[in-house]
Amino acid sequence: MTHEQRVEVGDEVAWAGGTAIVTDILDGIPQLRSGPLEEWPAERPEQLQVTRTRAQRIEDGDWR
Image 1: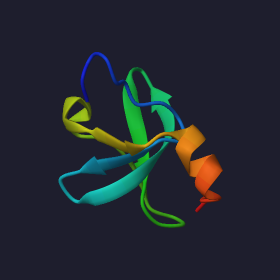
Image 2: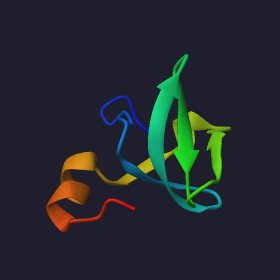
Image 3: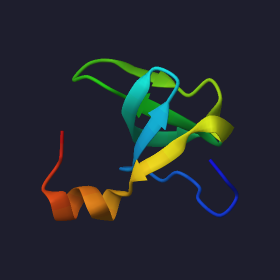
Image 4: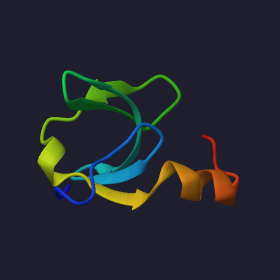
């Protein structure tokens, strides 16, 4: 994640273990979800890469 591209709720991000959706941001730490029940705080938020923004996901019809 760069200063220019901060993650926001609803963004799809790439991290060391694959891809996930940002569900919340608590105390500056993005909360990630990759399955219907699996959710966790990002261990290295600065390394997250936005692969699709929330707006792009809406446009794609992807609300998993």
